[in-house]
Amino acid sequence: MKVVFMSLTGQTRKFVNKLGLETMELTADNAFRKIEEPFIIVAPTYDKEVTDILVDFIETDRNRSYFKGVAGGGNLNFGKLFGFTAKDLSRDYGVPLLHLFEFQGNEKDIQILKEKVTELG
Image (tube, rainbow, N blue to C red; front, side, top):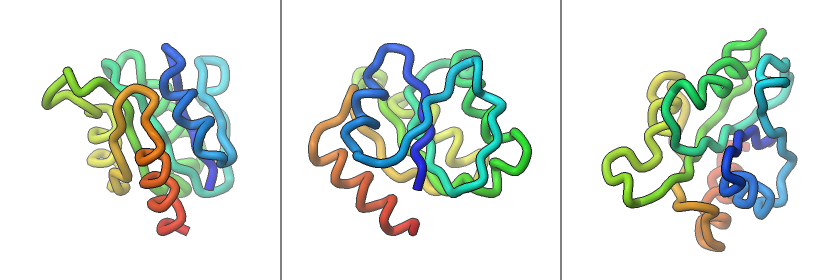
């Protein structure tokens, strides 16, 4: 399963790199790239204007049909807003919210998400 992500501060990239899975980092230059394999998204928590490239990617060609789940990173100090980008994507696209982690996550977060990805197939 491919892990698609975006990272502005590097925290999400550090987390994703610890997973040991195939990854693709989204930027403004490749947000409309077509994918033809199952993927999950790991999303940082930012306003929609910042994370719109995630939606652009999902909505490109048939990408949506390969979207299997989402995880999210953020800061627990955000309270109810912690992980809202991942929560919104899960709700909007009907995919499971696999896990939420703080900053770049820890070993337990890595283990949890890897297990969830394995369960997805």
